[in-house]
Every structure is written in structure tokens, then in C-alpha cells.
Length: 541
Image 1 (tube, rainbow, N blue to C red):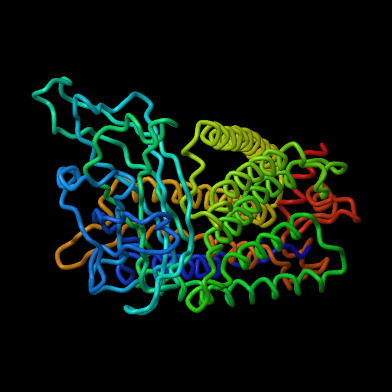
Image 2: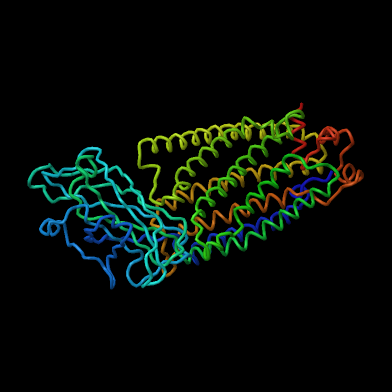
């Protein structure tokens, strides 16, 4: 009656394995909390108002806010009026990074949001539902004296959402509106040392472009990039975990192929889960240090989506294989109702990601949230994915309830067994329930740490020790799911222990009729564990 390792391993050895995994889990959290810096850094930038009166200037000249070749600057728009400089000849220039600094490929990505300083003026009031048109260009260079090379140029429209806390009277002129941040730009790699952004606000009264947007005083940007120190810790974790999961995956499949029977669905799904975890772990990000791969953010989203879709499918199939009858089990098609919402939800999120980050590969200034159609489309995809997720959890809760009911029903026959046999099956049932609780704990920890990382200041300080909560969340949860997959493949691999008839019926003190009642299965649909068989037997009865 050889089953899985989890069923044939002694309680002492099982506790040792659990203790070792717990130690690695604590280490994963400590690596992020004590060694890694904060995952990201936000840097504020104030644009400099430059003068450029040439035509088609964005194609022939880049305006620098400072340095040896800096542009002719304006202090404010009153100076522009006094010099009779038109709005179309004013360029807002931002150099990235700040003076005396350099960008690095270790920063991985750059995300920028925009804030407009808009002053109230009676003869130039901000209209309701106003839209601002931006003529934006992005360039790079790797040497201080190199020429700027264009990366992207686009004309983008952003909706202004502003409020004014005072009465709109002459006394309130000069006070600023309170405006929401606007999405501005996102780049999936930081392959160059210096970047330059030139922003123009073209005015065309006949076409209504940039009319009724108030008196714009300044444009501020906030740049967010990944910290280089965190990137190095993250890459090191991936490099360490990749061979760990790969080795246990090869070992797991080898033990299955040594069995005389064909692999059952549950074993195939566990193996597929290991493949998806390995797909996430492979540290292809190392190449982003030497190559300008702007698609890495999109690729990372796809990898995570595949893993989580596989994880959700595993939970459904794991429960289903312990409750379905002979005809329905061991067939993926039997789970179309439960796996269907996972596929639909994942597809919707994939389309949403392609509409956002997919387009940003060509136009980093694009955002799906800037238009009504784009916003409605994005919300539709997110709502459909949310509905699918709710349906999935309803299916999962129902199936978990069914499994526990089946096992509880079989427990009623345990008192009639011999003591050794009763203890044996009580141990099997306890370990099965324990795994279910561990799964629930992993899911709960993911949600809890995500919430904590959002509501805290990013770090906790205990005396002289600073704990980076957000970094601990990333490394801890990432390590936790790796350990979870590792434990599944190790504990649910076929055991090498094969008990003979004498040991099965003699040492455990059970007659052949009792053994038949407990573990009888159809031979061509054998199971990987005894609880698997036990639960199926109850479902058949």
C-alpha cells in the first residue's frame, strides 16, 4: 500500500521537514526586511520653462534645463508676457536624473506621474471636464557631451480633475487648484544614463486645443524607479531558487515515471505547477542589465499570471480529485466549470495588460485610463476578472466542504477498526487536513502582507534596526510560494516504501475484509495517496 511520502513519513521526520521549511521562510522575510532597501524610490522633478521660437523644433533641437548648453529660461509667465513670447514657444524641460547623478540598468523601470500647478484667474478660468493636450518628447544619451537621441514622441490628451476650495472672486485670484495626479510615462528598462523630457502645451483657439485649462504656472513630475540594491537581492533570490525548484521537479517526475501505473491527473497538475514556478524563477532579468529590453515588465506580468492561474487550477483539482466519483475524476474535462472562470479571468487580465503595457512598448506616454472608452474598457476587463474570481472561490469553498464531509463520513467507521489501523488512518486524515490549512494560511498571508505593505510607511524601526516592510513582503511572499511548491512536490511524490501483505494486515492488526473496505479502488484508476482513495471510496458509496 505504497502511497505518497507524506503518508509514509513518520511524524518526527515530517516535523523536521516542516521546521526546515519554516526556517527558510523566516530567512526569506529577513532578507527583504534587513538586507534589501526599499523596493522603489520616488524622485520629484520641477520642470524648467525654456524659450524656443523655431518651427518644428521638437525634431531638430532638444532643450536642456541646466548644464553648459542650457536653454534660455523663463522665471514665470509674466516674464513671457512682457517679452511677447507665445505659449506655443514655451517648452517645459525635465532632465533625468537630477544634476551630478546617473541612471542605472539596476533601476529596471521608470514610472512618471504629472502634477500641474494651475492658478485661478477670472479671465482664464478652468472649465469643467477640461482636457489638456501635451506634445511630449523623450530622448537619451550616455555621455555628458553626446547628442540626444529620440526614444519617443507623442501627442497625448489628459483629463483635468481639479477642485477649488475658495469662492471664485477677485480676492481668490492667484490661488491654486487642487488637481489630481495624471499618468504621464512608463518605461520597462533603464538602459541609459541620462534622459530628457520636453513638454509643450500647443494652443489653438480655433480647434479648442488647450483652451479653458486655467493659468498653468508649473509642471511637476514624480519619477519612480526600482532601487538598485533591491534589484540585486531580488536577482540573487531568483538565481538561488531556480535550481532548487528545478532539481525537486526532476526528482518528483522521475519517481512518478518509476511507478508501474501511468501518472494520474493530480500528479500531472503538481508537476505543471512546478513548471510554472520554474518559469517565474528563471532569472532572465540578468540580461536586462546589458540589453535594452523594454518588454520585461509585460513579460513579468505574463509569467506571474501563468503561475497564479496554475495555482488556482491546482487547488480546484486537488479538492476535486478527493471527492469526485469514478467516472468524473482523473479527467481535466471534468473541471471545465471550475477551471473555466480561471481561464476567462486570466484572459481578461492579459488583454488589459496588453492594452496598457503592450502599447507602451511603442509609446511610453500612453495610458488606457486617459480616455472614456479606454477607462470603460479597462474597467470592463477588471470587473469580468473580479466576477470570475468570485465564482472561483465559491466553487473552491463548496469543493473543500465536500471533501471534508466525505472524509468525516469515513471517519465514522474508524472506531470499529483495530487500534493500529485506526491510528494509521487518523494520521493520514490529519495530514491531509493540515495541508489544506497550510494552503489557506499561505493565501491569507499573501493578502495580509499586501494590506500591511499598503497601509504602513514602508519601514518599521526597532531601536537601531530598520525593517523594510515592503521589501520583506516581496521577498517573503515570493519565497513562501516557492517553498509551498517545493513541499508539494516533495511530500506528494510516490513513496519508496512498499508494505507487504503480512505487514499491511498483520502488523497493523486488520483483516482482509477491513482492508478491502477501506482501500478498494478500481485498479486502472489508482491514486497517488491513500486519502485520495479513501475520499473517493466515500464518494462512490
